Image (cartoon, rainbow, N blue to C red):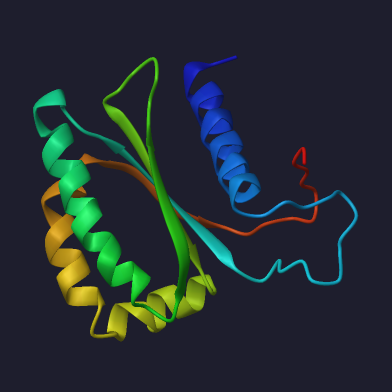
Length: 138
């Protein structure tokens, strides 16, 4: 496989693992399973000299996500083999509410000001929707 395809598969698998770490789902859709929310995946390449600043910025920015009615949760991971690779997962009520609700809310500007210094390091920023095909060991 081409390296780009392999990396895309890694990010999709990482997104699925994020969902699994949040809630335990079986492969059959339970009645209480919410498949309407959206997962934003943001991939960054952050130089080693900026790791601490990046993590500190998102630690502070996370407070604004926590106070948002549009955000269910977030998680940040970094590469094991390549620690300069970071992935930010943000669970939104929907992609539309993220773009048209959160971005127009009072929480957005302070959030953006904290993470803006790292925008040039973004490799990918997309929304993903969950499927009912999920499993976690209990």
